[in-house]
Amino acid sequence: MSEEKKIYFAVKAFILHEEKFLVVHKPIFEEDIWELPGGRTEFGETAEDTVKREVFEETGLHVNPIRILDTWNHVNDQYQITGIIYLCSFQGGEVQLSSEHNKFMWIETDERCLSRLHQAFSERIRNWDWNKIIKSGVAF
Image 1 (cartoon, rainbow, N blue to C red):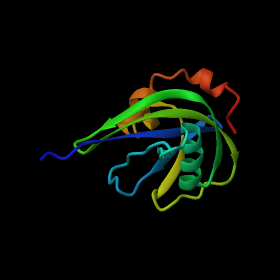
Image 2: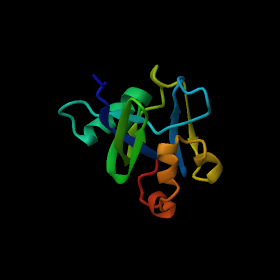
Image 3: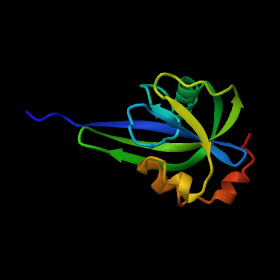
Image 4: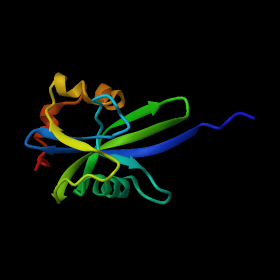
C-alpha cells in the first residue's frame, strides 16, 4: 500500500518597516535560507486569523492583514504546501522569536537580499511592484 501524500494550506505575512521586510530563519535549514513568518491553517480558522496567530506565535508581533499580495507553493516528496502571502500592517509588539526560528532580520528588496529567500517566495516576490507596495501606507 502506498503512503498518501499530504497537501496543506498556509499563509505568510509580508511586513514592511522602513522599506525593509521581515524574514525568519529555521534552525533546520543549514544553509542561509530565509522565509516569511506564517504557517499552516488550523481547521475552522480563516486565512486572516491564521496569519495573525502565526505571526504572533513566531515573532511576538501583532499584525493586521490588509490584502493578498500573491500565492506560493512548495512541493517535495512527502507533502505540498500551497499558500497565500498577505500584506500586513504592524499593530504592535517587538520581535521575540519562538523556538521554531533561530534568527530574524529586516531585509531590503534588492536582488542580493531576495536571493537569500526560500525559492518558493523569491520567485514570486521578484515580480512584485515594489513602488506600489511601499507606497501603500502600511509600513511602520
